[in-house]
Length: 144
Image 1 (cartoon, helix red, strand yellow):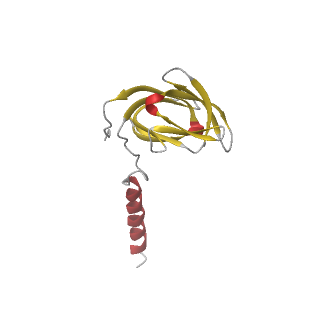
Image 2 (cartoon, one colour):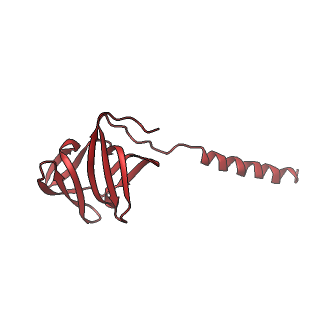
Image 3 (tube, helix red, strand yellow):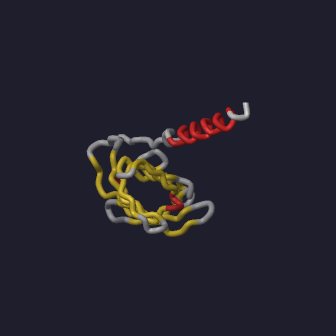
């Protein structure tokens, strides 16, 4: 009995290791109907180019302008820069395709998702420095 315990324990440990290595990401991203190619730079200056990008699973920004809720479709958005980050809100300056600019606020936990050459990504707004839409692509297709 004593000899079988170490062998059984070793098999259990090896088996649990492989279970963790073969699982899929916890929550896969939503692939939108519209496909936007974007460039995102995080607070550390790391740039990532991505496609099939969404903001909170949608292809529009949901922000506050004063006390008003505003919804800005990606089709009208050129990009945004994060101006300041607080615990409860992020102030961003958006630039529209007609070159007009607005300062708005958003939730720091809002997230941008998409696909890059290395796979799927998700980044919270609090970690983004800049976001720019490079191109509207014909259709959204998963890069898998």
